[in-house]
Length: 320
Image (cartoon, rainbow, N blue to C red; front, side, top):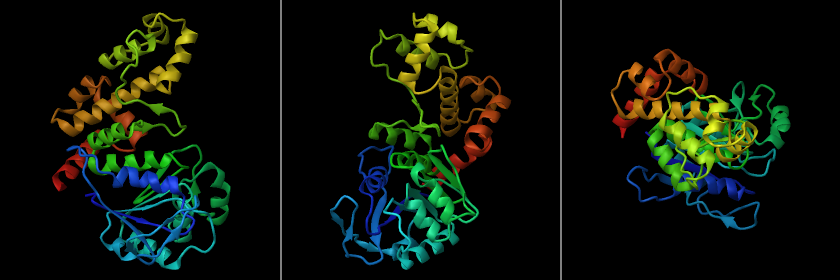
């Protein structure tokens, strides 16, 4: 159950990354599909102002004892240094030992590394800091060209806006796809993005119904089970193949076939969460054609199986 969010701050805090955490977990949406989290900003000492890289100070209301109640500890970026507060590092170590979910954004990974949380684990940080993170923590497996990495209870994200992707991943995992997608719509961001920064659009809303690409997106969404060729789609859009490929990438952020695969995956996840249909029916209705093909996509894209995904989503609903 994801309810209480603890956000530990240190001096020279990065304001944007802190704002990402506030926007995802601290906002009040007045939407029945999005829960209001118990959002707590903390420091080594409550009431002691901390500096930010942008200049203004932020005063945490709570101290680190709230880690005991937290379901998620979200660590924003801060100026990289060698002397992070030892009290914070010890508290993070205890939280990790207890299996609490811990998120870092951008250079926040260095705080986790200083606490010993990255040793022997997969992780990510901003591309500018990859070499330094590897040098400081040679046993850590630092990934490039990813938005975020999950290793057990640890989720580390790349720079800046990748924190949104990692945060939505946690929401999606803990509370389900419907909550994550609804929140993404409120934030006007893509609910799922690939690791190479290209975006997927969950359900495209064409900006102009006369636009060829918009009509193709509508057509593909309505016919997820069809096998399309680039030539067929270009003809449907009344464009040359070259123009269509370029325009599609501009509008959807990826290739037509990858976009179609992402829509099938999203459709199947929704059916797994909200219906009791058997896997063959879900595979057919979402466009995969067969349960075996659907299982392959789940293994490669989500690292799980449709059955396990449904079980986990049911457990989440039962705990709410």
